[in-house]
Length: 307
Ligand code: FDA
Image 1 (cartoon, rainbow, N blue to C red):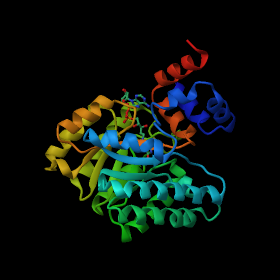
Image 2: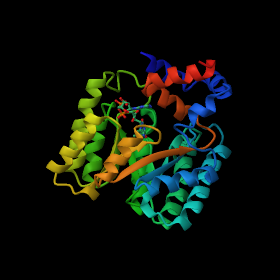
Image 3: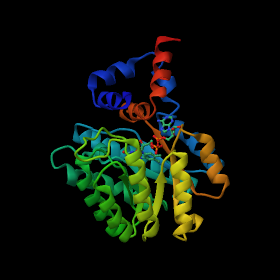
Image 4: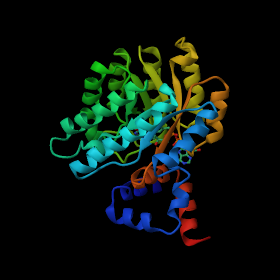
């Protein structure tokens, strides 16, 4: 019951101010967002790659309101890519971007987001890596998929995310599986109405398995974005049945969640990519993590009231 309430709060400016100002918020946020600057995140990258893990880097931020913020977002990614280049990690460190942070919701937003994200994709390709377009709420997805198609004309490795809770996703998955895309499948983290999305966990899980089968049997590169132990073992089974080798799909999890499982899958020979977020505009990302597991909220509240 708490999840939808927290997700509604994730879009409230008043809650943003309250949560951000809470005295101990930062300590709790650090579990999921282990740095605010490129300088702070580089040692984290070093530690994760040293443990045999791969990364997808997210500069936190979304729902920006001015063109200047959109270009600042582009520049933040370009700075990160500039610092990653000399480390020669190649695809071991890719980027994840939210198009709303690149201006998608501003006037002329589709073209603006494309214009801002393209240099990031170009810079990533120049250091031998790639970019994945995160999926935000359902109203943004037609534009996201069109930008994905556009970028793939020059950079076919550009990935995108699909969300199992949306009814539309089974069809999106068939198209992306047929055109050979890199696709991350997640359950979905936004508050979506019953007209467009499954609301029950078991329905979402069943859809996840159907969609994953489509991706595994297709021509693309499936990226399994989940911490759910049941789905992870089903994914391994589906990969085996589809005859995929270990380097023909990968697992992805979020930094700060089930860290021991990251290491276990990597030790088994799987490609395991950790979604690692950093930056100062962490509110929306943090609230979605609270909504996914209400125990996180209790922990957060206990730390605020000091018990
Ligand atoms: P589920 O929520 O059932 O969790 C399974 C288990 O994992 C839980 O029982 C718990 O142990 C642990 N767990 C999960 N979330 C936790 C949390 N926040 N704190 C502590 N433990 C937790 N969504 C989206 O809409 N667009 C996107 O672009 C992305 N991108 C993305 C990238 C990657 C790499 C991942 C892993 C996830 C996303 N997501 C996302 C988020 C996704 O939609 C979903 O909300 C979360 O992954 C939680 O769902 P699970 O599949 O982990 O299952």
